[in-house]
Image 1 (tube, one colour):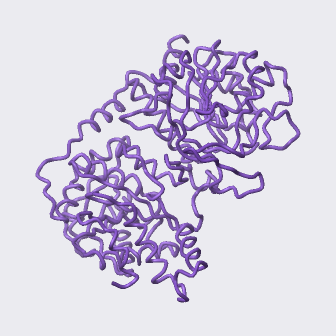
Image 2: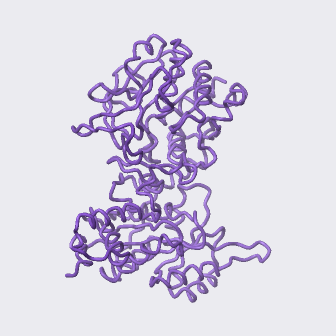
Image 3: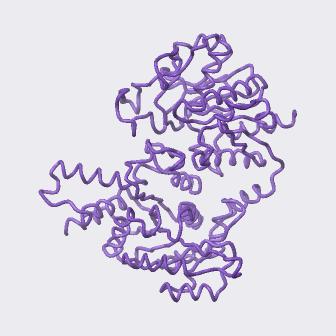
Length: 555
């Protein structure tokens, strides 16, 4: 067997692969399409794995600005990934892993490390075969007994960055056998009001571009505002060289939880099963999705929650947070209307005017000094007006600083993240335990991949509100931070009415703070939104939304 085919030794015997590409324009929803297809295949009883292949040169999105890339989604095992893995987890329920996300930067890093080590025995390193081989090895890595592996290719067909991935999956289909590989292409059918018709030409051109790379799509998922007439499906099929029944409409819906239902109705999962010759006589059981969609459409009421952040110009920066609030609303059969407030605008404005119409306040995570005063003004407002408050990561740290400055009398209480000229209530964390091993970082080290990342255990005080919410004294939540509240100031915090109620198992790191003198005031160092699912909402968000509902009834 040649070197380029050795990866086939890792290939499970029954696993089938679906590669999802996108064309025409970006932001067509490939991630949501991949997650939805996985969920309806799961509803048929299949075991499915989702993977993302991102063409950008960053090793991971950890150092990328949220206003450019969107949120950084963190897995249990500490991978910093793109937000699509959040879609995967929320729709499928299975936790993603480090091996489910790859970037061009990571691929090149692996290849170059092997070259430096001499693993290629003096060969000239090229995109083909070395980069494409590394991509193919990733596709089959860490697989077990999955029925389907769905691999989403980031970007749009025609992007120069994506060419190695298209070549890799073309080779993969040839190596593995076409009967075990499907190419699913997501396109756009724009509606031109003046012409009064859907236009198929963009889809035709996109497929033609894909064919230039040697890939013939087996199924088209066409984003459309309306039903696609049968004659238009036949036209697309004729020009794109596939059967008309494999032109599937991806219709706009009123909420994202309707997407799996819509795709199943259009026959997406049946088309995939038919292509692979898989028995699909029994329809997918989508009753749980129907119940969720019905709750979203007909809530018992509505609450307004303010999110005071610094990345509100791109709401994708808070994707998991927004979804977790929605999940909390669904659990309470309420709609959550989010009022996005720029923390810098709050610094310049009047907190009483900007916050007096909300039922709860949330301050999320973030990096950097910009907007911190606005966040603390929001926290002060929540504390003084008894408005339910949730602080996440940096939001918890700001809650601690607000208490220290305004109640404990430490006016220069600050964080060393912004410099040394302050009382270091929040400081850089350089050592901590992870799975029994000591993790050590340095203040002048790399920024990427050096934070406290992934799932960590937390021990709760049994008489705390948080322990009541979780129904347990031991929890595990995901982290992404490099600064911690300094427990040397715990006595001063206690005297000012703030209590540390959650700690790392060794007691060294504070995880959760509460104010017992407040109806609902909690700050957490972790990110509970990352593990929230529509069918298993994060307990903190369920309780937080309920507190907002209770507060709305008092107004």
